[in-house]
Image 1 (tube, rainbow, N blue to C red):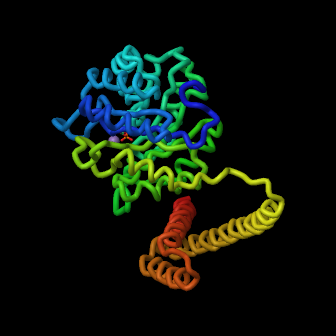
Image 2: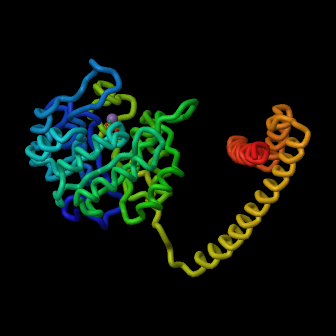
Image 3: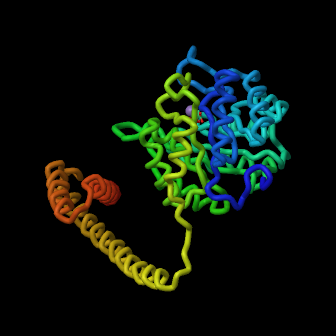
Length: 356
Ligand code: PEP
Ligand code: MN
């Protein structure tokens, strides 16, 4: 991998159009990206998995010739999305340097296995694996294992966090659910993880803030979309940046270092961490006490043949806690999420007691 995606470079930047649409658009965009000097690899979609049939589904193999030309002109390695063994063979025949597995493919173990088989024993090609569109880390982890089993070396597998589909209101097109990406990183601590702020935000106005969050969370870099004329893009128009705007965005991101050996800093950090550890331990003990009391209530309800859930009581708990949260400067969403988790656990325990 070192030759293609250097392992000691942070941030690693993969950039390019959502789709290669025409030779001119591909060359113009990618040459401008290369000229910024900030891009390590070019990306472009050639086969586009679309939700609706009949929308632009990519240029197929002829787009690969344009990318091969980009590679010759800029000297940058090029990556495309593959979803079938045929894509893999065609992409490699046209000299693509790296392949990525899209969020709609990672959801399918059969498709992932077919691609892994097509690459079996190929140690030279980096495989970039996006998280599945649904928030299921086991599928993402399973995809990594399939490529490892096929003989792809660990340092040639790169993870991309592109956010997750969700139901409900959100600022972004795909909810980042950062905690799921942390879970993946703790399962695969040696693997590099990049953030895709384009597909998370779905809107070019939010790309910087998502990318800065990724930098603050110690990600290794970004995969980001860029188009020479975003408003005319055939796919993902709202989230693409011109190469110039992308360069300005990248320059504005602060990739803080992962650590600092300054003794004063280390000393105060250590003291704060001890305090946090004590508080966490208190929190767990308090939760245990709260559950014990919930169990006793469960016993009383069983004795008096009363249903577990009393809506009025739950509403009172939430209302009171939210007033308190506001007074203490805590966000109501945060406090509500915690209370709901506690409530679900209490109900589960009372359920067990009442149905023994
Ligand atoms: C893409 O990178 O253009 C793409 C389709 O991404 P995702 O698989 O993350 O939706
Ligand atoms: Mn896209």
